[in-house]
Image (cartoon, rainbow, N blue to C red):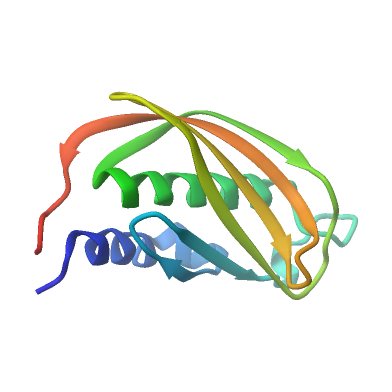
Length: 139
C-alpha cells in the first residue's frame, strides 16, 4: 500500500514533461525535496549553456513538489521569478526549495539550483495557490 507521499513522488516521476526534461528525484520527504538534472546537449541554448527556461522549469517543479509534500494538497503556480546567477554547460545540477510563508490558500516559496560543487547557479521565488483537494491517503 502506497502512502500519500509515495503517491505524490510517483505522480511527478510519471509526469511526461518531468521525464522529457530528464529530472530525477534524489530526496522526497515530508519537509525536504531535492531533484537532479544531468545536462544534455538538447537543453543548451545558442551560447552552449543551459537554457534559462530549464532553470525556470526546475525551480517551478521543485517549489511545487515541496508544497505538495508538505500540505498533501494540489497546488498551482501563480507567479514565478527566476534569477540566473551563473551558467553551466555539462554535469549534474540540483534543486531544493524552502517554504518562506504558508497560509491557508497561498504559499511563498524560494528555490535554489546548484552544481555538483555547490556553486549557486539560479535562485527563484514562487507564489502558489493551494487547492484544497486532498490527495489520496495511504493508497
